[in-house]
Image (cartoon, rainbow, N blue to C red):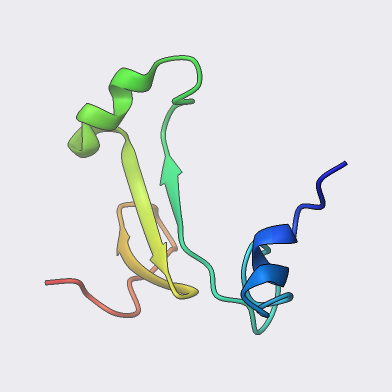
Length: 73
């Protein structure tokens, strides 16, 4: 069985990569639909991309109450 933190272990970043918790680096997208059900949503960011978090900070958001900390623009 492969551990979820195997890649983080390889680069000596357990607790920083591959998890969402305090002090970890977080990069993720918040989508308005499930790309596993329709990958085509990834071609429509204006419609489906709700937020982008990079290094644990919100850089793009159209979600009420989720403010942008650092702008990519």
